[in-house]
Length: 155
Image (cartoon, rainbow, N blue to C red):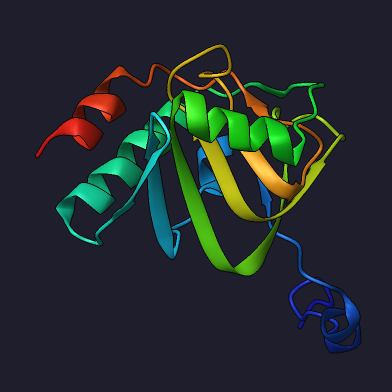
């Protein structure tokens, strides 16, 4: 048997496996909870068909992301977004760690560690995905939020 065919078990046991995504939509995993903020009012989205549809549309919006913005958002910025705009927040009970690079041929990798993702749907920042608490910056540009707003406002 050729040595290339047999993995070196000593190396495999010691190396840390890190998942690196080339598509920004892959950073958006199934959250434990989705919260919709509409003009300051908060609604928790039930885990039903609407939940799955919101997740699908959000991933579709993220599929066109090309870069990380150099913006930084404070906690007060996030609270203002929730009060004054339509926003969805994906909440994760456990911290998520992932790497992303906007170009599969690039050597540069962005590191994200988060338990929340903020998606402004209206207002000045509606083309961003803000990962909290630690990220190199918001992902940009997110696709249009029009379809998502319609789904969220359906009774």
